[in-house]
Image (tube, rainbow, N blue to C red):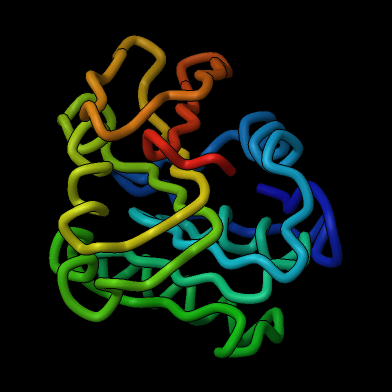
Length: 183
């Protein structure tokens, strides 16, 4: 899998075949960052980070700070190894191990990120619950982008508006904002 743009463009991220690991397709990654625009000086929270490819795409495109959250120890070890091998500083990419619900309610509670990207396990109800988890953690963001199976159309909480949904094969990206946010 290759980074699609920016300073790390063309770098190859080797992703082992692991049950449940489903990296975001290149076409969807590229489209998401094109839709959201310039990442320079912006921050991103990467939930259910898996391979870390979304964090690397954001860093490559100039993100000031990315925090990745992943529950699987093996995936966290691989992300930290890539961080060292590729020379990505800790202050630009912070990798946290833990369940998303616990990390949001703990060390990330009350923080602000320009972008929150989440790629939860498909068809398990996580996608529809994520906006509420962010609200409960008092975590603010300009955009919440959730990846889900294109066969599923989550019902979003009333406090959130789905600005658009983009489909890329079996993958859909849902672009959400809090109702009343003017950005």
